[in-house]
Each structure stands twice: as structure tokens, then as C-alpha cells.
Image (cartoon, rainbow, N blue to C red):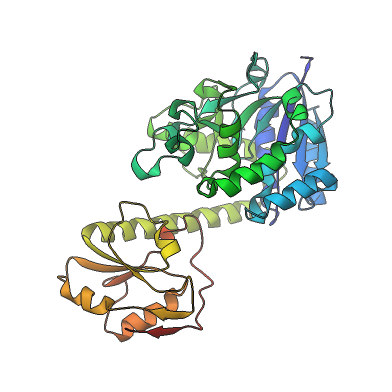
Length: 408
């Protein structure tokens, strides 16, 4: 196994603001690990020279080593990533780089620890490194959040019976057998076929795929090796002696929260701690808080009105939570820009005022809004913008307006 611990991160940093999270994770790792460590960074041309130098300087400050690999300079990997982009947005391509470790990293590495950028290591990583894999090809921690989902929220892999519920793992921390990955380069091709055949698995594309191929060869680890911060907060678990995973952007500024304290403790030791970065982070946090409040207020309103009329795109409406039921009116926007509304107003007026509401799920919201107001309806009282409920985390922008509305 050798005396050197090999750690891997992968990144695609389109706006230049992602690398600082990788740096913070590396800082926490190096602060708590005594053994010799080599950091392997899988990246593309979006890694700036400044950010690369920051990673170099910080790693060398701790007397450790770091190596960089431009994934797309490898023709085979470049072709694989190009195929992945046929079925998944380019801004998330960095998550697939880790699947190419068998082709990219040196052959003398027989095992590897992969960490997501939103990981804070509060233990000596050697504790994970020295765990024997036995016959397993990878080791990972069961995903507490996915495992506890019920009803319409159950992960498609579990619902289809591909993966046992109790064995579904989180891919943010992986102990990997490099011999397996070198002997199975087709993994990069297989992930495209998997996503094409399982369109519903695109929410966690790399994680669902890894769960699928390693469903019978993953060693399940104790929770401390990948503690999901959001879940740990709910059940009041300490971050002491654990690898903490801030999935879902679980960072905050709560001085009484030990997870927030831990993140900022390590971030402040990195080259990225400056006034502009703090201002950007605070601005993003405030924006997310506003969006959370808006969505919460929207849900409260919809719960108070039992008679829902859902109006807009059939595709978008299908992405609403199953509990958000109601009469659906198709705006025809998936097929044409000549929008249709049917007898929606007549149906709406037949429902008692305190019970009715129209949920618009349409990319033409601004157009439909004007039309409904022209018919005497009031925004946020008689109708609401339900687009945020169909695309979690996306912005409500870029609506088209060159459409015609017709009644029939």
C-alpha cells in the first residue's frame, strides 16, 4: 500500500469561484493528516493560473505534493466527455472526470481517495486510507438522505429495484481500487448509455451510475467517513472526528453552528480569504435565503388553497411534486408558441374564491401573467409562478414573449 496517501479532486470552474472550495477542502485535509499526501487535481482549461498557483502554494506550505492533469488534453477522455455532453449540461461535466482516473493517473497508484469539493476533513485521512477493500472495488458511506426518502421522492434506481435501499451510497467520498478502474476503461462509455436509457437518473447522474455499476461490489463504511451536514444538523450529530459533506451548499454564517465554524476556520487559512470573496459568499447566501423564503411562502399559499389549476407546459408540470395535484390545462407551449388556455377562466370562477388558485408552470410566464391580469385576476392571490417548484435551484429568468394566446 506504500507510505503515500493519494487524494483526488475533479473540477470544472467556469466562473472561477469553485476552486476555493477545493482549496478549503485540501486545507482541512492537510491540517489533520500527518502522513505524506499527494493531491491529484483533475481539471480542464477553466482552472486559472492564479487558482492553480494558490493550490500549489498552499499544498507546499504543508510540505505535501500536488499534481495537475488537464483531462481534456487526453484524446480518449475528451471524446468520452463530448459523448457525456450529449445527454447532460456542460456546466456539470467536471463531476464525470473522476470516472477517467484509470486512464489519467499514474499506474503505480493502486488505490485512491476521491473527495468532492464540498468536503471538510476533520480526521486524519489515514483512517480511511488504511481500510482494506477486500473483494470490493470501492468503499463509500450509505446516503442517509436518499435512503430515507419515501413516496414520489424515492430514487429511481431504488424504485426500479436496481439498488437495495440500504445500500445506496453517497459518491462524495470514495475509496477506489485503481486496478479495477484501469482494467475497466469502458466505464466512461457506459455512463452515456446509462443516462440515455435512464433519463430519470439525471438529477444525480454520476452518483446514480456509480451506485448502479458497484451495487454488488461496494464496501459500506461508517457514517463518520461522509457525514452529510444537512442531515447531521437535523439529528444533532457532532462534526468531531468526521469527514463532513456540505452537499446542497450547506454553508452558513451561524457562529453557534459547529459545521459553519469548521468551514470558515479552514477557509480563512487559504489564499482565497479576502474581502471580495467574503462579500460574494455573503451575497450568494442572502440570495439563497431570499429564494428559500419565496418558495416557502409559495408552498404555504398552495397548501391553503386545496383547488389547484395547473397551467402551462406538460413537461414542466410533470416535474412538480406528486402531492401538488390539480386540474391541468396544457398551454401547448411544448409544441408551439401559439399558446392555448381553453376554458380555464370559467373553471377558475366556478371554484369558491378562498379555495382556488392557478399555478403557472411556463417559460412564458410574463406573457401569461399579462393575460391573466387583463382577465381581472391578481398575481400572488389568484395565480402564482410555480416555475421554481419544477426546477429547483434554477433562476426564474429568460422568459420568451413572442407568443400568441388563443381561447377555445
